[in-house]
Length: 180
View (cartoon, one colour):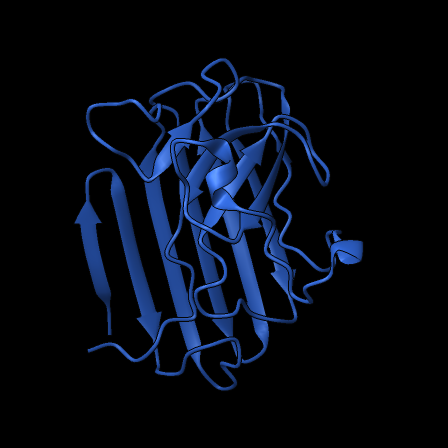
């Protein structure tokens, strides 16, 4: 069963076999979201916002996919049109994007604990773009995201645990509840 909606530059589809919350034992789900970056002041709002058009130019694009089954989750990121040969940080964040880069809140953590801000406890999708400005990253976790607590992917100017927020993409992360 597929549920999908196209709103502006966002296309998202979710496949689910019921369930909800972080415990999706025996359930499968898939989320795909695609958008084109625009500045927060753009006439047409986009779920993908660039805060630094030198590092993430307007009209560059992003795709995020999440899939899971049982207690295993995979999150992938793909970008096009960014600065060639640049190393970026990227992480799943707690809140949706906003005009202020801080709107996305902090990193999503599997075990909420500031002392555990690392790639094992968070979803880090650091990548380096190729000569054409394309970049990809994929991470696999033995856990899923808690419902409603992961809402965006923030791109940072440098890889690792921190760095300036240069772009943000609001993502309808799963697992999803039963489709109606």
